[in-house]
Image (tube, rainbow, N blue to C red; front, top):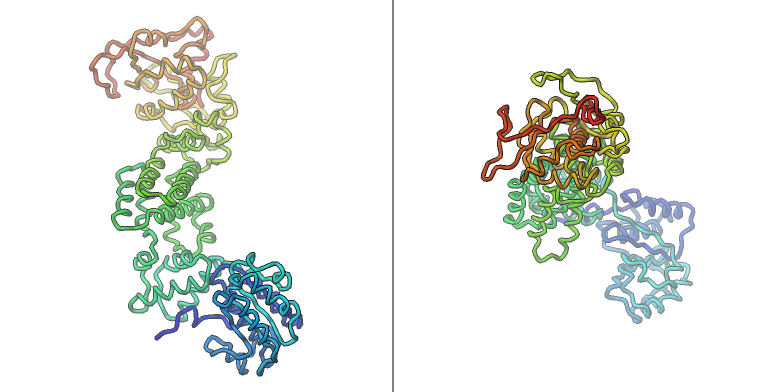
Amino acid sequence: MVTALYRRYRPETFAEMIGQSQVTEPLMTALRTNRVNHAYLFSGPRGCGKTTSARILARCLNCAEGPTDTPCGVCPSCVELSRDGGGSLDVVEIDAASHNGVDDARDIRERAIFAPARDRYKIFILDEAHMVTPQGFNALLKIVEEPPEHVKFIFATTEPEKVIGTIRSRTHHYPFRLVPPGPMLEYVQTLCESEKVAVAPGVLPLVVRAGGGSPRDTLSLLDQLMAGSDDHSVEYDRAVALLGYTSASLLDESIDAIAAREPAAAFDAVDRVIQTGQDPRRFVEDLLERMRDLIVVAATSAAGASAVLRGVPQDEIERMAVQAAKFGPAELSRTADILNTALTEMTGATSPRLHLELMIARVLIPASDDSTRGALARVERLERRIGVGTSGVDASSAATVAPSSATPAVSSTDASHAPASRPAPAADRGTTAPEAPTIPAASTASASAPAGQASVVPAAAAAAVARPIGPVTFQQVKDAWPEVLEAVQTAKTSAWLVLYTANVLEFRDGDLLVLSFPSQKDVASLKPTAAPGEGVGDYLKRAVNSVLGFTPRLMAKVNEPGASTPVAGPSAVPSASPVPEPQPSSPAAVGSQAAPA
């Protein structure tokens, strides 16, 4: 029979302990200077080395060359207290979970009176000390407070607050901690080399994560993987199946489906999770972990992320960099928040699959989120669709630009990264005017509105308006129409009420926007009014300029009953009446001129 891995590699000196320097260094200093206390309290999570440290301290105290901070390992006391030793008569280990009463405390008190059989000290190690009853602690109080010179007490517990204060105040308290992933990963890699076991890339980070920072739990899981592997090789698929984690391929498929907005692929991944019997909550936890990795990669780089994502292969980090590029900063943060909320709501849920599917639906539909973060996600999605890069977007600064939590009026792209916008159309409608040089967005916003009128875009956001690259297409106008309506609503609610019923039929000649309305009254409302710049058409033109970067000509018609929506093209629109353009001499003409953004 093979001894368990955590027993074969149990540390025998303080120098072999990992991740507990806050405990080992003061103890070694106390041993070197011969300032050892009569009672110690070791506390911390399970499996982090409390009992092992108590045994090492006993070896240091009873070593033939001691007290010393490094046991010799050859004297009878060191041999008996080693990992293969049978124990010493002068070191008494007591399980306080089953010896927690007054009678057990009296027995310890009576045994402490007698001198050690051979060694320097008689040492009592009480494991699970929090299980001792208050009466038992009170019975021990006197002997712990004033023990004989040859007696030492070491209490080990996971719940130090349950040890009564009178005992705690008479001990030196050393808190143990969980081992960080970095040192733990290096330790298990060294151990695998000692065992001559080949481990596939990505397995050890899963083992470290499953161990939760406990060396004993981590080694137990690694021992289980080694025992269930053939040819001294631990495969990734078997480790994922045994540890219950989601495979990297399924996570990649889920992330790609979310980034591409493909509901069929995303819900197919959810169905695979359910059909394979995997825990939905674990799937959400793994997906949230992957989203956190994408945020790290997007915030740094593929090279810089290697220092944070320890143990992750470089090819996987490069693949995550490609995935992160498909998201914007605000969308990554929003998706992570949705996953985190779903993970919390799934605790104790009777239908985890329902929560899982609703989570995917919320992630895929940013329009369902009326918060500022949802608005920024929609803006970033629009920027990617019209060809504006979002690599320089700062989600935190963009959140302050949004006019309200429900109105994503502008993009959050920095003005210094904004490309040259589309200029006003030439006098000859059959030709395209040459592109104008880039003009700061702040001056563009002021130029697109008449004198004395407030711009559709807030002043703080004017410097962050994104413009499409190249000529605007009909599809871009259709996609940006909801943003245009929201910009009109911000500027004038009555104008929005008229335009809300409009449908975009065509976009011709690079600047002619053809709309259809349910009534002739709505068509007439687009005509210029007596007040320059106050017409419905004026607000619409300024909104289109703020979102897409050009001022359109407008043509309106009444919906024909039963008529299908025309497709964009060069053909004329029947029954359509162009909206008269204001004369150049009037003030309205100034507001209708297309301003480059």
